[in-house]
Amino acid sequence: MSAVSDCINMLDSETKAVETPEDHAEELRLWLRLLTCTTLIEGEVRGRLRQRFDVTLPRFDLMAQLDKAPDGMTLSDVSKRMMVSNGNVTGLVERLVESGHLDRRTSETDRRVQVIRLTKLGRAEFRRMAAEHETWIADLFADLTPKDVRELMRLLAKTKASAQKSAARRRG
Amino acid sequence: MSAVSDCINMLDSETKAVETPEDHAEELRLWLRLLTCTTLIEGEVRGRLRQRFDVTLPRFDLMAQLDKAPDGMTLSDVSKRMMVSNGNVTGLVERLVESGHLDRRTSETDRRVQVIRLTKLGRAEFRRMAAEHETWIADLFADLTPKDVRELMRLLAKTKASAQKSAARRRG
DNA sequence: CGAAATTGCTTTAAGCCTAAAATGTTTCCG
DNA sequence: CGGAAACATTTTAGGCTTAAAGCAATTTCG
Picture 1 (cartoon, rainbow over the protein chains, first blue to last red):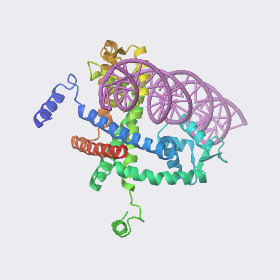
Picture 2 (cartoon, rainbow over the protein chains, first blue to last red; picture 1 turned 180 degrees about the vertical axis):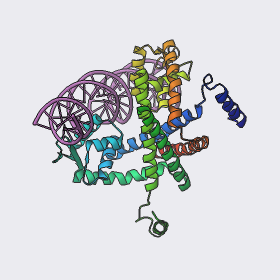
Picture 3 (cartoon, protein in one colour; picture 1 turned 30 degrees about the vertical axis):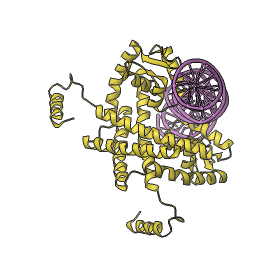
C-alpha cells in the first residue's frame, strides 16, 4: 500500500471513522503466516518424533516441562505452562504413568494436589529424544542468520505481549 | 551467554567439531516462542468464535478456504491448504454439510473427486463471522507498528522457506 | 489393450483437546 | 467454629486429529 493511500486512509479514519471500517488485512495476513509457519514446523517435528521414537508431540512436550523441574510439578503448573486444559493434562499424565515415564503422587501437605515427576526411564528417554530434537529445530531454522533469529525473538516477544494484553482486555 | 563464552564455543567448534555438539539453544528458544505466540492467539480466537458464534475454529478455517473459492474446492485442495490430514477434512465436511453450511457433489468428470462449496447460508454466516474475526486479530496485534508487521512478515516468510527446505531434505 | 501405479477419498483405531459440570479439599472470614 | 469461596483435579460429552489401511476411479505405459 502506498504512502498516498495510507494518507487517504488516515483522513478517512478521522473524518468518518464510524462509517468506514478500518482495514486490517495486513494483520490478518501476518496471523495466517504465523499460523502456517507453526503448523509446518509442528507437523514436521510430530512426524519425526513418531518415526524416530514412536512418541507423540504432546507426550514429548509434557516430558520437556518435567525435565526442567527436577522436584516435579503439579498438574495445574503443567496445564498453565503447556497452555492446555486441565482435563487434557489428566489424560496425558495417565498414559505416561502407565508407560512408566512418569511418577505421580499426592502432595503430603495438600491432598488436592498431584505432583508428577519423570522416572529414571522417562528422563533417560527424554534426554535422548531432546538431543536429536534440537538438531531438527536447528535444521528447520537453518536459513535464518543469527541476526534474523534475534530480530524474530524480539518481534515475537512484542507480539506475545500485545496478544496477552488483548486477551486480558477481553477478560477484563 | 557472554561474549567470552561465545568465543570459547567458536574455538571449540573449530578445533573439535565432531566431539562438541553445536549449540542450538537460540533456535530452540525461537521455536518455543513462535509456538507460544501461535497457541496464545489461536486459543483466544477459538474462545471468541465459540462465545460469539458457537462455531469451532476448524469449521471457521474450512469456511474461510471456501469463501476464497466461489467455484468450490476438492477435498484434497482443502486438505493441502489447511495442512491437515485427508481423513480430518472428511469428518469436518460431513458435519458442515449436515448443518447446512456446505454443499458437496461428486465431480462430473472424475467420480473420485468431491467438490464442496459454501451454501448461501454458509457464506452469509461466514462473512458475518469474518468481519468480527478481523477486528479480533487487529486487536491482538495492536501493539505492533506497521514496520513491525512488515518485518515480521519478511522474517516469517524466510522461516517458512527454511522449514519447507528442511522438510523436503528429509523426504528427499 | 490391460496390469500396475497413482490419485481421491473414506474408514479405522487411537489419541488429543476443549468447555463445562462434578468432586473433593483447603482457605477465608464473619 | 462453620459456611462460603476458592482451588486442584477428574469426569463427561463432543469434536478434532493423525497415521495407516482400504476402496474405487483414473492414468500410465509396456
